Length: 238
View 1 (cartoon, rainbow, N blue to C red):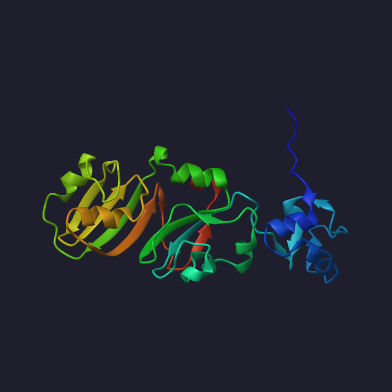
View 2 (view 1 turned 60 degrees about the horizontal axis):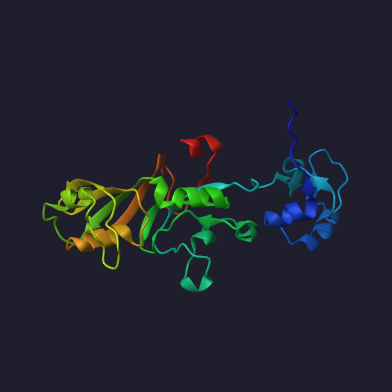
């Protein structure tokens, strides 16, 4: 069995892909001592290096491609790359992360007025797997309603027959848990546009506050609004 060695790439390409700088800036940053080797070996822009050999301002580099971020999204932020839409969830991350290639994108979306657990990644395959309807990843939402429940909502949501306005197929069965007459949790395995809000609209109610508390086995735990952390491979495997 062959020993696997870390792949090496040009220094300027590596730093550019991680958003630290554009490739033509690397030579100047080397001269200024901002970019260094962990063993103080000489470097040029085209030196082939491994990710773990390089320091930027004496700090190890950000994770390579395959990074997964768990964020506690606040209300008022949008899951978009368009600056014209207002405050972006990407504004909560280090500025250089917006320059990474591949680009970091949200795994599904939470609308502007919804808070809670949001995942972001630069791994296109993972993004597709977790957003594909075929994989039925469960999401748990906490909802506050405008009017008291009428009593038949849990049965309707669980039936798999609820049709949303403008849709051609019914929602998959969903689990409604009643906390009190205007506070509930709803577990769904789809990610249709504004799905939770539209499901309650379909049964004559209106969601006034919405928070996503889990995504699969992942929870927010002690993350405060606007905070985030990187997930490790073990957490993503669960």
